[in-house]
Amino acid sequence: MKRRKISVIGAGNVGGTTAQRLAEKNLADVVLLDINEGVAKGKALDIMESAPLYGFDVQVTGTADYDGTAGSNLVVISSGVPRKPGMSRDDLLRINAEIVQTVTREVAKRSPEAIIIVVSNPLDAMTYVAHRESGFPKQRVMGMAGALDSARLRAFIAMELGVSMTSVHALVLGGHGDTMVPLMRYTTVNGIPVGQLMAADRLEALVKRTREGGAEIVNLLKTGSAFYAPSAAVVEMAEAILADRQKIIPSAAYCEGEYGIQGLFVGVPARLGARGVEAVVQVDLTPPERALLAQSAAAVKDLCEKVDAGRK
Image 1: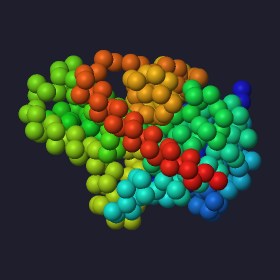
Image 2 (image 1 turned 180 degrees about the vertical axis):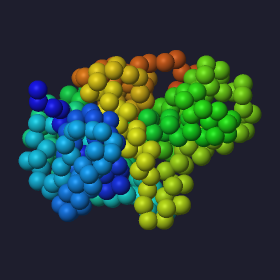
Image 3 (image 1 turned 60 degrees about the horizontal axis):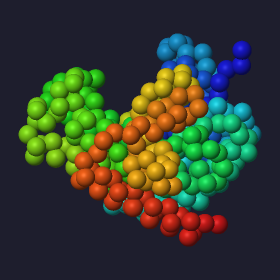
């Protein structure tokens, strides 16, 4: 039986680590593509040499030729310029929009039935670009956002309380990063509302740290941005899709009226399965939560309009 194929576009830290995690999960053959062919081939070979130790049998190949991605079941777009200290996600808009536009056109031609997961920043706007350029139905294009933001919030809460990471569950909506909307009423520690275990000011501090999570790592690394947690978030989404798990994961999904949002990719609870985004799951929001989500969606809309204005 022919094995499934995942193409990861961009062999930087996020792309390379994503390829590694996908291989170690034995999910599918992986094609790692980069304009720097040596980097793509070198990382692919290095991953393959770890196969006897990790016990996976899928093939990982590196290339600079989009023909190698043909027939992919899933495409992860991680290419683009990473954030640098002092740089906002908005600063990345113009150059990364051009990169994602080109990449999407190339992969869509060769894998017309693929599902696309976008990782490039600014995430929500880049997912919009991928959807526009691919012409794919909304179910088959999504962005990795809420999965990462939720994981960061869960990690900070677990570290604060000294409990297992697996005991904490959180839900984050809205745009990726600064405008995210944490739903603390739905954030629990083994079913216990987190507000019963932590003072409100400490919880607010952790929410602030989550919003600034990417910038915190950028400032610490000096010469790069986060890649371990983002790659893990991508793999969680990929596994849910390829295994048809019907798993609810906060993702940048296309909204057509859900949560009062129209025609935008915004972070919402999405049920992921074999068709991609099988459904957007709607939860009750308080008026303040709904207002914050509307503000976040407005910020995403502004970025998308800037992208359209600069379209080539």
